Amino acid sequence: QKEVEQDPGPLSVPEGAIVSLNCTYSNSAFQYFMWYRQYSRKGPELLMYTYSSGNKEDGRFTAQVDKSSKYISLFIRDSQPSDSATYLCARGTGRRALTFGSGTRLQVQP
Amino acid sequence: GAVVSQHPSWVICKSGTSVKIECRSLDFQATTMFWYRQFPKQSLMLMATSNEGSKATYEQGVEKDKFLINHASLTLSTLTVTSAHPEDSSFYICSASLGDSGNTIYFGEGSWLTVV
Image (cartoon, rainbow over all chains, first blue to last red):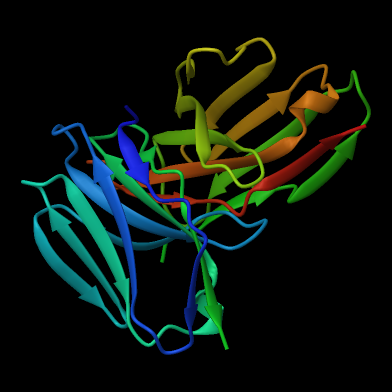
């Protein structure tokens, strides 16, 4: 079993839709959680990070962590074509390298 | 926000030659940097952890003599692909940790290597 599981998609939604991206993880030792957005042929861009269970909101993005279920989500409201990218969830412990999911490809249709 | 810069962003080299990729943290000091490799439509694979002033820690299966990592200062780490072969063609990405707890990690723009 992979430490981080993520549906690879692709996920296609119409512009303006609410997007829900999800990951599950197996290692309870993970201390913090991140979501990255990666455009084609570019490095990952940090979107959000959180340490605890609950919700964290930043503009159109909401990160949700449920440590009891080992489940994390990223919600994108009012999705735009420019949101079309691959979204990577990641978990980390201390100063170690992050553990990534496989990434979900999102396509927002205009 | 913090910025991590990679150079070159793309490079083409001949088989058998060596290529150096630089990773710089532009507005913060990074005691730890990480090097990843990414194949098309796949996630990031950690190659090694680079610690300033000490030897890099390589992941299992990564040849340390082929992928030389040097972290000579708090703002610069380099990855040298030695005796490159076409199968080394890939997207190489570095990241750097911000903060003492190391839990805010930023990535460079990546470097595309094509070996012909």
